[in-house]
Image 1 (cartoon, rainbow, N blue to C red):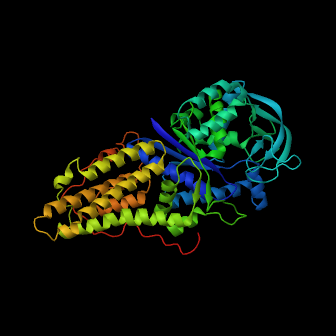
Image 2: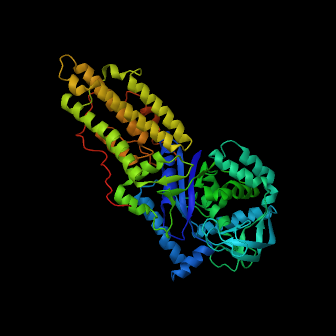
Image 3: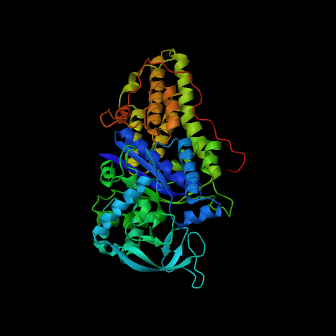
Length: 527
């Protein structure tokens, strides 16, 4: 079965920001982990390009909506390439094939009797592309998220009969694991408990969007259109735009990873639409938290927005991935603090992990003819570092399965800390000065090098660049977390978990000349 994983389809009203990079980096780590386990992964990301907000943004810039979308979606594509995101698809909802998928899906829903015409009245946020219930401010209500005035709307729309699916949605969200983390499930349960109401799926007099077949003047509401991008993205390049063909390529999704602000659309509206069309439901919806900076919400008006392209340029992939995945519990809100960022990168990666490998490899090469020392007693599974490695591996694998990247990173780091402590306690640099100690020194160095090998393998989903440099320094092959096999090919990475077993480092194998695998991060100015 294909493991289909999605980020949100990012709205192209503006260039990529740190929040979209955060989601995408986390999904990349999950995709790499699943590939290393041996799963056939289909990792989807993309851009949501329709709606009134896009039209107005383009007009303000003196561009056609299509030209605006082309420019911004190109920024997303380029940024993900620079970050070496391992996505298999990047779908754009302006893709002509997407229109055909939306039309076919709508036909199924309409045939089910779930489309009715009605009048939509209420306060609307163009930035959210959403009607707001009971907005604050009686005379001049504003959006609580964007702090912008709401617009009053009164028009005939097409409605999806969400109210018909009250019981099915209640049963769905009650299933353990469907909505994660559990705190998000509580929010959705409270919303559903109030009673589901039919929601508008069309707008009138809005040219920038997909026309609704058989309903002149109606354009699909951007959310009805965008959610179906997950299905359009399943198509191979050579496929015709057929809904059943797309579904056969990898539906249902194993997990939708989204920001908590769009949880309702993915955990309530989307499943109901799929139920109406008679299609399988996604297995999990994971709503992560928001990022702030130094305790403040990021915004252009405050001048504190973190540009992911600038972060990459000044700090590198390893540093940013480590901080975001290691310091912030995925699912909770997080705060980007520059001093803590620098400290964690330098202490964890440069000092604890990098220095461990560098100094151990240097000693082994000097005393054992530039090769891995004989394992001796360190080859047994009862060695203290073997036990530590087993514990770290067990914890990290279980955590990654649950998208608990912080737990996985901390377990990996703890193994490196244990190896450093063991090396300091054994002090081979002192023991080598004593007679008859060569065998013990060899075993001690072997144990630390083997622990470093397992640290590198555990880092492969989280920090593939650093993992590669570490394994190269150990003369070890890199498990390819980016590979996409043909259906009839041997699954890449299927030996990854086997390689996590203690004792994989071969005594006598060459040790390449060491060089620092992680440079210290020096930031003299604010990012």
